[in-house]
Image 1 (cartoon, rainbow, N blue to C red):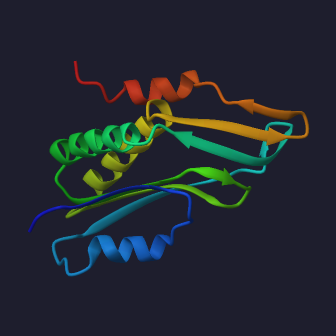
Image 2: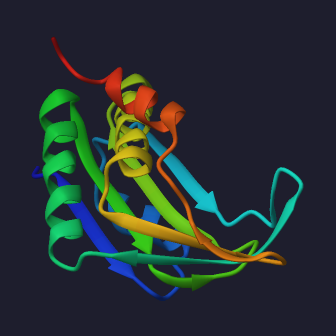
Length: 155
């Protein structure tokens, strides 16, 4: 069977159960599905967050995510994966991102999901602006996200 790979960038919300069902439909070779869903927080430390606005570079973002999806597919024995990332204005409690990885065994699915999320946090061409009581500000890259992504680099 061929691997099922889905990559979408969208403004609308997604249904996690529906996405898992689409990834696994008709497959009897899947023994594990790992899911990571990122949700908009309502605070960052002592600051209250009213909303996030996510922007992307159309075409480039999809291509970059696809490139990393291909890396995950070649690095681990996956039967499929899905990456769905929202853009636009997102309020606390709403979904931001979903990463699903499917494999015969859990180990590969867990590692591939972690690899993809580390990439998305550190290197994907998305920009995030926070709205709060003090106004709006663009979020800078964080060193701990870069360090998490760097551990996947093969020497």
